[in-house]
Length: 179
Image (cartoon, rainbow, N blue to C red; front, side, top):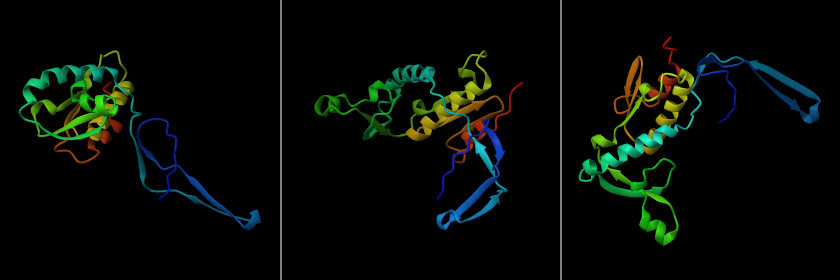
């Protein structure tokens, strides 16, 4: 497996750049090279940008969801704390005893655990690329935490339960400007 970082000018679908592969066989006496042109394309996602307003939204949802989901979700396990976890999910007793910050995880699908990620969550003064970057960060966070989400773009709605893996990120990468 070979990983080559390739800087791209912006998100979207891009052809692979022309690559040169070479070898300098013994002691640099002979140099062999070849040009590689791949027929595949690269899908470049928006650069994830942490969304500070999302922490406020999830805190407000967290307050309202405590009453409705307490009987529907069962405790599953403890997991290392991740930035953005709701304070009510922190295992405070473990923190007091062992000085380790962990979060409680639950199983069960309650309506309150559905994350709404919408284009309309941001003011109209925010440019499209900034919105896409923030939505990308929120999608990645939901994927990382295993949360179900619905992504609402101006021309598309994607439910993570019915979508193929990576479909939301692909929609963000290929989003056309609304103008």
